[in-house]
Amino acid sequence: MTAAATVHEGGEGTGSPYALSHLDALESEAVHIFREVAGEFERPVILFSGGKDSIVM
Image (cartoon, rainbow, N blue to C red):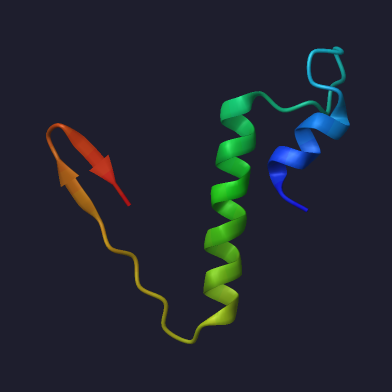
């Protein structure tokens, strides 16, 4: 189950203390992906480009 699915199930906008904002859900999903990759591969690699007009990972 993805973090985005969790947001909808948590009742976003209902005042639930467990509801995530859209950005929190995206961050949670990204962290989940990083952890999944780190656990799956022996030597994972991250490519990073930090130009002045954009930061892409």
